[in-house]
Length: 40
Image (cartoon, rainbow, N blue to C red; front, side, top):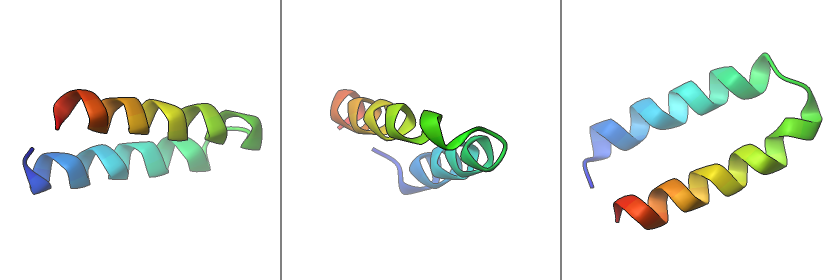
């Protein structure tokens, strides 16, 4: 998996978390974990 692709994805997630309620952060973390597992 490309490091640059992963960093861009993390940046998008961070922006999403800042603009969302705290209750969405846990589900976002699970989504990231699934994304990493499927792309590894």
